[in-house]
Amino acid sequence: MKQNRFRLNRNQNRILFIFLFVGLLIFGIGHIFRVLQSGHDEYSVLKRLGQTAAGVMHYDDLIHLNALPEDTLKVQYTIIKKLLAEIKNINPTAHFAYIYLIRDGKVYFMADSEPKDSPDCSPAGQELTEATNVDKSMMNVGSKATIEFSKDRWGNWVSILVPLKHPNTGKNMAVFGMDFDGKALKAEQRNNLLNELLLVILSLISLFLFNKVFSDSIKLKDEFDLLKKTEQELLEAKEKAEESDRLKTSFLKNISHEIRTPMNTILGFANLLKEQDLSVEYKELFLNNMVKSGERMLNTIYDIIELSRIQSGQVKLSFGRTNIQEQIDMIQEKFYPIAMGKNLECSCAITPDDMYVIFYTDRDLLSSIFQKLLWNAFKFTSKGFVKVGYEIKDSMLFFYVKDSGVGVNEDQKSFIFNYFRQGNESLTRTFEGAGTGLAIAKGYVEMLNGQIWVESEPGVGSTFYFTIPYYKHDPNLPI
Image (cartoon, rainbow, N blue to C red; front, side, top):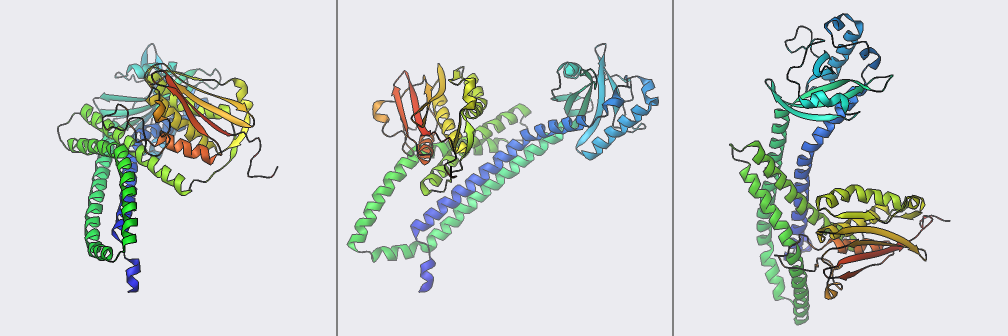
């Protein structure tokens, strides 16, 4: 009989399944996102690799080379060529490392990483006849490293080009370059994505099958237990079921569409990617749509998990020294491109003096509050402006996010900060979202001992206000 204590009932099994499903889904989407992101990050890594390699160049030796055949007789040429060979050997994915300069509008090699007897060797003074406009413009772009995608008779290439400055004059005197096989890079990224998609789909199918078997195994016990319940227990179960239905209806109404739609998109484009005769343009289009759908679903799941952490008290405060300018800089960096994309005026009522307004708070939570409110403002604003500002009153910081968007009806102000509630909860609504952003912002504000509210007029815009204490000293430390 003791072993019955450890047997799960149907509700427990359902909760366990939801947790496992959500956890596996988050892990899978996160893994796919990392694979997709790694494709973009890989180019950034290559750029940093090129910058690092360019940084170890012997500039004092380079100034003695003029990209002429007689340079091969100079000891400096031997030193530079040896250094280029070492750079290539350290980076086995690189096919070539070289240095060139521009003379009379033409590209001439100064040295490269290939042995003198190699057919791929480009001796000093040899002209690169297939040089592109990017190659020719590199000596005029300051110190900015550039990634170039090119194709020639030898193949497809991803080239990292870094201008090299004269040690005395500071002007660009040559260009350092590294070539990587572009076709191999894209093939590797595509194979990684397909493998991870297949793994996630198979894992989810396995979880559904396991849950079905496990549910059937406890079904008889659950039915037997129901027969032994008293009238009071049945009434309590009825009340709980009604409450569960209300919560489930609200939950499904707000987020099922946000999960199901992007998941169908991901699976649909994944199947299309199996076609062998797809062009590169279509593949990139499909992958971009999968990334956007994955990000949309991942954000929804992350918000749900964050709400769960807030409700269960798992979010821990970490106070630190900050100022208004730091917060605004982070906001502008993240949201300025969004404002530009929607042709909105994005402004901050902040002056240079505000960088000296020092206070203590949980910087991560404060940043998250701003982000949630700004996401909400940009989502519901199609023209006009989004403005951020603050003022100090009675030892409190009053922040606001103001927009010229669609506004909020009076009857909606009472519930838009509730979990999974939105002004328009129809599945045919214009705006995406699960209705979690404002609830998370409210939870964070209350954790910081503040308040949040909205003033709005439909068709004119909204202003979301929130307050936090103006701590001039860390409240967790003695004064």
